[in-house]
Length: 149
Image 1 (cartoon, helix red, strand yellow):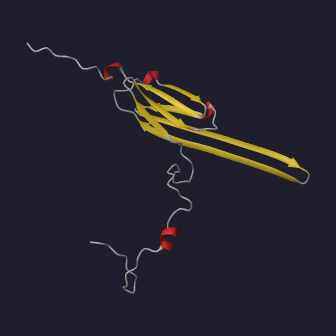
Image 2 (cartoon, rainbow, N blue to C red; image 1 turned 60 degrees about the vertical axis):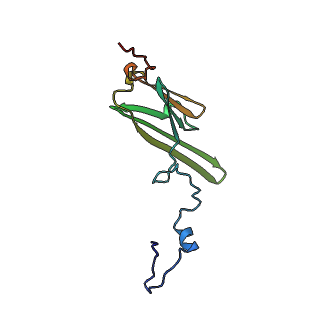
Image 3 (tube, rainbow, N blue to C red; image 1 turned 120 degrees about the vertical axis):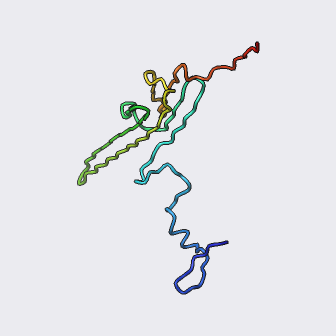
């Protein structure tokens, strides 16, 4: 069964090229790194190995002092803000420019798995790297052969 949109006059219409074009965001090429306020949100990669979780956040142009990493219970929140301004005066005009960048990402960590006291963070070459170690008893142990008596 197909659903077809009907006009008030009762005639069926096919989806129009114009409707499709004007109902989309202009130049949205599938980039989902924008929040509902049209600000950029950095991409996050999370990798798990046997000893830890590794979190990578792409945030070029920042300084390590621009970041705040906070752990509240099992909720890890990574935020950043950076403000920049400049002023230039020449002859008969003054040029003032400013910019403000910020983001906030929250990740819920697994309960009773993470060693919260040994989380490590560093910022290098535009990449914020977090190493979140697992507790010893949460690490996967190698297979053990059980003897049959």
